[in-house]
Structures are given as C-alpha cells and as structure tokens.
Length: 74
Image (cartoon, rainbow, N blue to C red; front, side):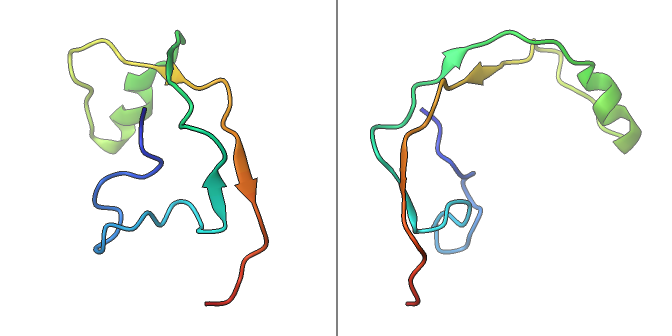
C-alpha cells in the first residue's frame, strides 16, 4: 500500500493532498504490478536530469472506493 501523500508534504505531517471531506470507504486498494512503456529519458533530459540505471517500477490499483460529502466550515 502507498500513502496518498509524500512524506514531508506539510510541516505538521497532515496530508494536504486529500481534503478532509473524502475518506476511504474500505481498506486502501492493493497495488498490483503493471507493465508499460515510455521514453522516460526523453522526458527528463530537457530538464538536465538523468535516470538511475535500474528498471522502472510501475504499479496500479483497480479502483479506490471513497465516501464523499459536502465541505463544512471549521
């Protein structure tokens, strides 16, 4: 399972990526292996970046169930 946010996205450790009005309805969706192709080197080269010499890793989740409600003033 992967968190919806990266560590360090906010100073207080809260996850700013997901509004508090959206919560998972079930356990986090399990990641499944995937395959794909992209010329990643062409994407990063114009920015002066290079890729590590390891094969890329790609995963996906079939779906994520959520419960959503209207925002409330706090």
